[in-house]
Image (cartoon, rainbow, N blue to C red):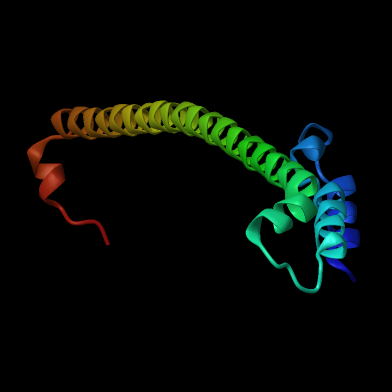
Length: 132
C-alpha cells in the first residue's frame, strides 16, 4: 500500500480531534511534483533556478514549516496532558496505597490487640500447654 493511502486510512481511523494534526501529505506532494516538473534539465545560473523554483519552493517551505509547527504544538499539548494525568494518577495511587497501608496497620493492631487480650485472659498455665 502506498504511503499516501496508508496515511489517509490511518487518519480516518484515528480520534476525530486528532485528524487535523496529521501531515498535509497530499498538498506537500503536489508542491514537490510541481517543483520537480518545473525544474530545467540544465540551469545556467543560480538566479535562473530561482525563477523556476521560486514560488512553488517558497510555498513548499512555508507549508512544511506550518506542518512542523502544527506537529510541535500538538505534541507539546499532548505531553502537558499526559504529565497532568500522570500527576493525578500518581496522587490517586499514592492515596490508595496510603489508605491500604493504614488499613493494614489498623488490621494488624486489631489482631495484635485480640491476641494480647486473649493472652491476658488466659492463665499462664494454659498458655504453657502445647496443643497437638
